[in-house]
Length: 474
Ligand code: FAD
Ligand code: NAD
Image 1 (cartoon, rainbow, N blue to C red):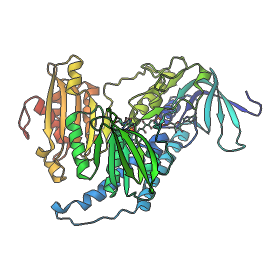
Image 2: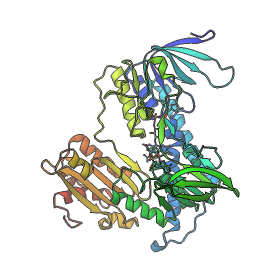
Image 3: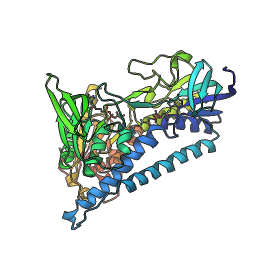
Image 4: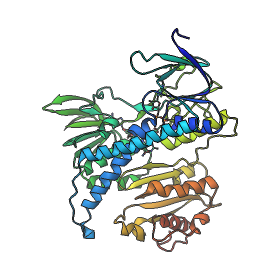
């Protein structure tokens, strides 16, 4: 202990108050554990403060303006003006409401909250440095620790974030004016979601992606719809080029990219958003102090119960590796707390959904047809195109489809890929089906409300059984 330290003790020390950490803390509190949660910045972590929530607020609001401004075929003539101050203010209000809610929920569940940066001193001790000069520090003795320190954006060597020209996603979510032009480096989740927001705000957007298409890991026909729509919104794509560096030129950024063959290209833009992935954060906690070493990619190795190589230490969320998604962090937080409380909990990743909030949205869960084949199944596939969905047409949205993958022999549902408005919501039904070991018939025979997009999920399941009514069977 350092002289001047205050010493306290806790059964469970949770480091990091994002989705992984706060869920672990609340669940631990519910189970009667004595939990202390230490957060160095803001409760809610990346997700609530600079990730899922602010981005989805902007995606919704700009989508609304775009929809109203593009509804002439419905007889609606409007030219909505977006006031950035109002938009960002509304988004910040949503964030504040949720982060305050997290703090209140933690307290209501008996979680002891400490503001500061925690780092391990030895196997059962951490020191928390409180923010600000003269704020001091305290030592905390713990029986179990849950590391939930999250991730941060990857910085390219030639394109350091400066908060002015070269932005990370947080900078792009907090613009006070719409830039004339934006070069987006990386056509992954963040690149695609935020370039859509910017294009809908009237910004001239160019995306440079080092691979030969957007959204690595998604199927070609899924990507095609998203890319075409993005192009209709004016987004210009350049594939097979990796951003190398930049310089200031005539009041703009001049960015250089390079192809695999060594050809170089140059782009100028008022601002540059670099979204080339995120890396686990372990350099804030002194892992060495507890005898842990991160993997080469910065993540902490864990087992099926979120336990690290050190018996009484757990790691959850982004710091424990891909997929770096908030709902995966929630689940791991739950499981870690339950295991510590002696419950028979374990992780099962077979039905982790993913959603990309592009226009239209993508929702996926479980296996694709190719993945099912690779896993040794003989898959059958059913599809329902949105152009055959009454509800989709009433929404003016006929691009997209629902695809369901099942095992031919047993008809157990294995996965789904959905491209549609609200695909992020529609995918939940298939996630539940996989989780419950449902068969195609369970979905197809369930009465779905008419007219809804969810009917397309039932029709896709029926189509896999050659029993679809609203589309031709395969
Ligand atoms: P984080 O949310 O990163 O929280 C970690 C916390 O630990 C931080 O608050 C940090 O301050 C704190 N911390 C770190 N070190 C210490 C220390 N030593 N002491 C005390 N505190 C410490 N995911 C989705 O599922 N859906 C989405 O739509 C989505 N959209 C996203 C949009 C953007 C722009 C970004 C950037 C991410 C998005 N994500 C989305 C990913 C999601 O935000 C993360 O997967 C999620 O936040 C991970 O939760 P976590 O608890 O592991 O880490
Ligand atoms: P990403 O991994 O999704 O995409 C990064 C892209 O950058 C890739 O396509 C990659 O090929 C490209 N790239 C890498 N280096 C490059 C270079 N030098 N030049 C050009 N292109 C380059 O990463 P992201 O978009 O930064 O998002 C990070 C993570 O945040 C995601 O993987 C996801 O886990 C999470 N996230 C999730 C959501 C959601 O769930 N809807 C939304 C946003 C972010």
